[in-house]
Image 1 (spheres, one colour):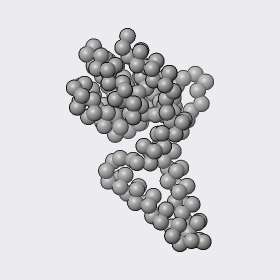
Image 2 (cartoon, helix red, strand yellow):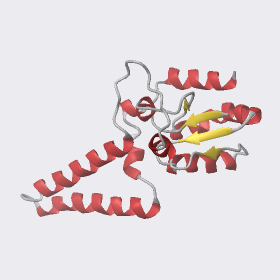
Image 3 (spheres, rainbow, N blue to C red):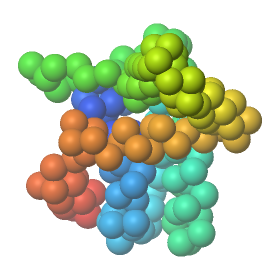
Length: 170
């Protein structure tokens, strides 16, 4: 079985299933030829932190004729059940995406409230973040995470992704 972790490189480095390969969700299309090869050799398991991104990846792969399964509950459930995760030796553990979203959302709400003391229109920033969080909960998506995933510390180096794709096709 081949395991593909679709979280950001930072999340992957913070702990992943042993033997998992990191192909961030927003790079899935570039990895499609390699994933087709892997799926042709056996089972393909896609994981993320909670199962939401991996379910999205499985749907996208299925649309391209690549069968894959998702790990229900993701790495969170995996570790809760007492299974080990792998961390690269000496790697600094970056923050999980969920923690990055909480920091960004909380900072924006606080900034909107503080700035609202001088300009009442600034409170709209807080209202916008609150509306986004409600939408995120109702749709089980997260626009803020999609934006934060584009930050440099959450993006794979081209050489890392290339090396992963080469390893998958061996």
